[in-house]
Amino acid sequence: PLFLLGAGGELRKNPAQDEDLQEAWTILEEAVAMTDDDLLVEYLEDSKLEPDRVLSGLRSAVVAGKVLPLVFTSAEQDAGVTELMDTAVGVFPNPVEMREHALKAACESSSGKCGLLPGVEAGFAARVLHTTIDSFGSVSVLRIISNSRDDGPDGDFHSLPHEAINLRTGEKFKMPSSSTSFALCGKDHLQLADGAHVIPGDLIALPKIPVGVVTNDIITIPEAAKEEESEISIEASIDVLTPLSRPVEDLPLMASATLSLTQAGGGKKSKKGRSAGGGSDDKLSSALAALAREDLALKVEQDPNSGQPLLRCMSGDHLQLVATRLKDRYGLEVELGTPPVQYRETLAKSVHNIEGRHKKQSGGSGQFGVCYISMEPLEEGAGVEFESKIKGGSISKPFIASVEKGVREQLESGGPLAGYPVTDVRIILTDGKMHTVDSKDIAFQSAGKLAVKAALEQGGTSLLQPMETVTFSVDDSMQGEVNTIVSRQDGYVTSSNPDASGFGLEVEAIIPSANVAGMSDALRAASAGEGYFTRAFAHYQVVPDNEIKSILENGPQSKQLMP
Image (cartoon, rainbow, N blue to C red):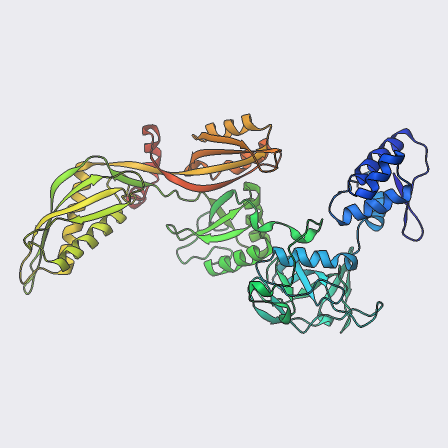
């Protein structure tokens, strides 16, 4: 090792005269000298630094975030572990020493506003590092950032506060007592005594924290929360090396899947929503909410079309892990599915003077309404436009609104090709007929629907697929791999530029939405897990002829025809 740890916890240079050690020491000297002007002048004048100056400069550089020590270890061979621990004791700052910086970083990265003064007398603040939920309840692991202490340099730190507030949500809650909590120390769980002192740096496990408190939240005393931006006492976060400033909110969620319960024998869930193992939709919802509370990289939504739970996470392996946890913890067998693609249809050619007639007579007052429409395709992204050219009062204004309502409902219900909603069309109401007694709102709604249905049948429709802008962030040597992935997914690259750091590459591509869902594993394999991508809707595009058949087989109309 480069240095050894003395009996008092101080570092000293290893006196061994080894050539590799001397070379490594020289590299360390240069790195430390570059972090401080005084050290740099001393190094340039004498071509070296005294060992104690190197070690004190190293510690200061680590505290300032200018140097990151790297210690090689091997658990199998029990090599480097002692050196790693010596480095932690001798080089890394202790939590009390660093709590001012940690408090700044923690509160600055939170969406809440913290008013604690970052100093020796700062009040209680902690970050939720981990949340575990099982059948017995929840346990939240807190890393203590700061705490108040009694007067004097050797005053005792206070115990846990009776009340706390979540900076992200503003929710106040009662803290569990110390006697129901325990400290984590290696493999040991040390039960805390009532009123036990809590020191910055401690890892404390608390039971029964409110559901609204999730991993990575900052909790502090209520009087430290500020509502106005001008009242924030925390300065801007400085560039310090701290595990408290993880950018977990920006994790790329590259994989997605729908989720459905299955029976023990492998079939789909029963009509009542219960599996053979006793699971239910309600139980599944509760289990997913618990897993999402633990895992910040798991988002649970609801697919608007199928109504099934929609999971978004980091990779295909991550999705499988969620399925395994549902089975092991909650006894729920689930099946992962591909999220349905939001295909659309549009009019292939313009049609004119299409009649929609609704006439119904059943003894008393009847129903009568007739409308004539023209329909024409619009450019991509235009949506649905409705225009009335009624003149002379052939249809009164209230019934024109009824026709429009029926037209829009019919377009949304699906086109004749595959049953997907119709978009990018203009409907022009040109004429109509009404009856002074029998014409009603419902009659003209029905007439509008019949006219649209006939117009779509006559003009035909084309199938549109959603395209997404996918931005890859990879190493600058991976341009070829990304191009291959994009081409395999029927996409095309639109731009390629260096990223903000100058060491990576940002590649932007347009890829069909249907092909993005399974792309995360391919990218992770090609980039050894380091590459990622973000996605956003770009536009709709006509589906190639050779792909239409497979899409029609799985469209809404095909499902309606199934026995």
